[in-house]
Length: 523
Image (cartoon, rainbow, N blue to C red; front, side, top):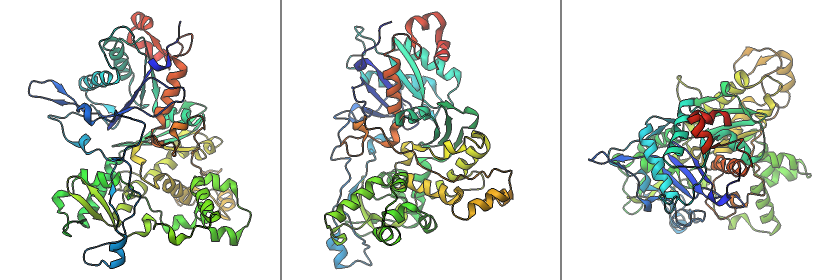
C-alpha cells in the first residue's frame, strides 16, 4: 500500500478548552498551526455557529507576534497611598496577557461539547470538527486529494467514543486513513522515553498517567477535579479580597469588574508566578547550586549532574555567562518576586496594578483544597505507591516525571511541583537508612511493609531532543513545552502513515469491511 505524503497528513489534538491542529508535516515537526476554542453556539434557527475566523490564531502561526509577546520592561512597587519618586521613575510600560479575550466572548446558546476531557455532546462536537476540518483545508469540497487524520485523545474515552470518532472522519470527511493516539503516551514519545509519570494539567481537571515500557497502566490512572480554571477562580477570589488599582485614576477596581476573565488575563501573563515556600527552598539543591556564594564557599568543583537534574541548566549557564562578562547585578532589572506590585493591561479596563496575589494562584493545587479531595503531590504519591507498579519499578516513574497541559503554563509551576514532591516524599540524608530499616511512613505516621515507599531520587523529565528545533524555547516560535503531546502525535502520524502496510491506522477499505470497530485493532 502506498504511503501518504507528509504534507497531506492532518494532526488534531482534542481538548476541553482548545483544539490544536495542523495540516501538513514538515521535515522538522513544528507546533500546531491553529488553536481553536472548543465550543459551538446555536442561533435562533437552530443552526450551529462558530468563532469567527479572525479570532483564530492562523496568520504566521509559528511566529510570536507583538500582541502576545510579554513586555520585558518591569514595573516597580507602587500603590497610590504609598508611592515614592523612585517607584514612579522605574514604572515602565505595563505587561500584557497572552489570554485571547475574544475566545472568551460567549456565543449565542454556547455549548461546550467536551468537559473535563470527556465528550458530553456528540452532535455539537461533530459540527465543531467539521468546522475545524474546513479551516485546515483551503477547499474542503475538493475531492482531488484526501488526507489522513491522526486524532490525539485522552486515555479514558470509551470504546464507543472512539468508534464514533472513526465513523465521523471516514463518513463525513472521507479520509483515506485514520488513527488514534493517547495524549500521555504521546508526551513520552516526544521526549524519546518509554516509561514515566505524565501529569496533564487541563482546563477543568488534572490527569495522572503512569506508563511503563511504553504501555499505559490504565488501572492506575487518576483524575483530579483541579485544573487551570480552578486556579483562575481561586485568583479571582484573592483579587476580590485585595482589590487591584486602576493606574489611570488611582481608584480600586470594583468587585463586579473582577470577573473570571479578569483573573484569567492576570494568570496568563508573565507577572503570574509560583513562589516556593521557604521550607522547599531550604531543601532545594538547585537554589544552592545557582547561588554563586554557595558554590564558591561549599565546593569549588560544581556538581554538573545535580545542575542538569535540577531543570535550571539554562538559567545557571546564563548566570555564569553574565558573571564571566563582568555584568553587575545592580544593572539587572529586579526579579518579579522582589516587586510588590506590577502593572498589567487588562481588557477592557486598561492598566491595573496587581499585588502579591499573583504568586498564590496554585495554592489549591499544591495544598489540599478541602477534605473531599487530595492535593496534586498527594495524588502523585498515592498513584505510584498503591497502583502503578511494584516497588522494583517505582523509581522508573519517580525519576521521569513530565508535566503537560496548558494549565501548568505558569512560571515556576513545574519547578515548584518537583520541589513539593522532593520535600514531602524524597528520602535524604540520615532519614533514609532509618525509614528503610524501621519500615515507617514518615508522612502518614504509620508502619509500612518494607521496602520503604519513598524514593531516593525524584526528577523531572525535561530534555527535548535537539532534532526538534522549532520546539526549543529560543526558537522564536509559539511552541509550548506543555503541548508536547501534540508533538508526539505528529511523530506517530508521520511514522504510521508512511508505513507500507496499515498496521497502525485504519484504511478506507478496512473501514468498509469492518466498520468503526476496526479502530480497536490498530492500537
